[in-house]
Length: 164
Image 1 (cartoon, rainbow, N blue to C red):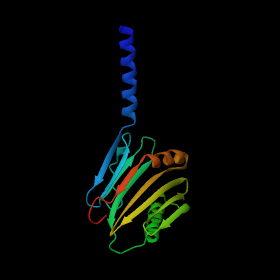
Image 2: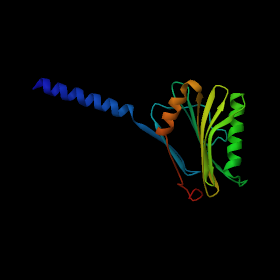
Image 3: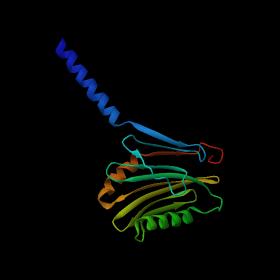
C-alpha cells in the first residue's frame, strides 16, 4: 500500500513539474489594447521597445521578443511601417536587412528579415488608428528556436475603443 501511495505521489510530482515548466505569463497594454501570452521562462528585459510603450522579453539563450503599440497619427500603410521596422533592424544589427519572406495586407504584415548573421521575425497588426508590432530577434544558430517561440506567443489585439 505504501509503495502504491509513493508511486502515485511520484507521478503527481512529475505531472506538476511538467505543468509548471509549460506555464505561461501574460503582459497587457491597456493604452493600445493588446495582450501577449508568453512562456514563463522568458525574462523581462531592462530594455524597452523602440517607442517605450510595450515590453521586451529575453530567452536564456539570447532571443529577444519585443511587442509595442502605437497610434498611427501619420496614417501609414502597413508597407511603410514594414520599411521602418526593416530600418530599425538594420540600425540595431549594423548590417543591411533584407526580407527573406514577406506578406503585407491592408491590416498588417508578417516578415522574416535577415541582417548579417541575425534574423528577425516581425508581425504588425492594425485596427482603427492603432497598430501593434511584435518582433523576435536572434542569431542564425537560433532560427529554429525563434520559429518555435513564435508558435508559443499568443498576441491578442483589440481590447480598447481605438483597437476595435
